[in-house]
Length: 293
Image (cartoon, rainbow, N blue to C red):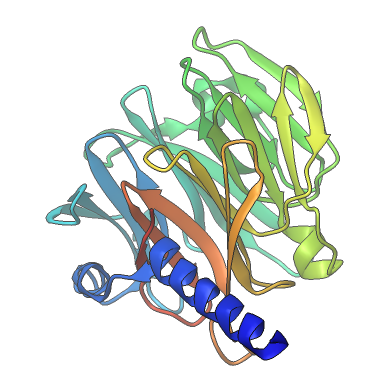
C-alpha cells in the first residue's frame, strides 16, 4: 500500500511539473538565435522585451530589443560605455537607466549608472541628473507603479526612493548585496546574494513597504512576478537548486528541483514575460524558456 502511495505521489509531482513548468524549446531556440553573445539579463516592458548580452570576456556588450513574442526589432552596442560588466537596466520616464562597473581592482568595484535615450545615446550619469546619488554604490534599481523608482546600494544596506517629483528619501536596511530587486503588488522584494553565495544561509529575501523592511521566508537569488498567474517565482541556485512558485501572498504552491553540480548551470536569474518564465543559468549562453500556468 505504501509503495502505491509513493508511486501516486511521484506521478502527481510529475503532472504538476509538466503543468507548472513546461519547457518551450521553440521559444528558447528563437531567443538564442538573436545573438551569438551570452545573454545576461532581461527587461520586460509593456510592449517589448530587452535582452542584455555580452561576450564571454565581457568586452563586447549589446542590448537587443524584441516585441513581446521575441521578434527582433533592433540592437544597440554599449561596449564603449562600460569596460567591465553591466548588471542592471530599467526604463524610466522614457529613458533607459543602465548600471555597470566602470573599474575593477582587487579591493574595490567602481559602479556607475548611466542614462540613455530611447535609441541608447548617452544622455548623462545618474548623479549628473540627480546630484543626491553622487558617490553612492548603486547595485540594483526598479521602478514602482506610481511614478517612482527604488535604488539599492551595495554593502551598505541602504535603499533610496526617487519619487515622481524628483525627491529622494533614504532608508536603512540589513541586506549586503542586493543582487536583484523587484517591485510587485505594492512591495519591493530584495534578494541578498551575499547570504546565499557567501554565508550559505537561506531566508535572504526581504520586502520593503510602508517605509519599513521585513524579512520573508523566501530563499533565492532572483524573484519574478507574473500578473497572468498572479504568482511569484523564486530561483535558488546556490543552496536549494530549485525554482519555487508562490501565490500572491507568498504561500508555496510548487517546487521544481534541478540536478546541478559546479560544472553545470544553476538557476540564477529569472524573468517573466506573459506566460513565459526565462531562466538564466551559469554556463548557459541563452535563457531557457518555460511556459507557466
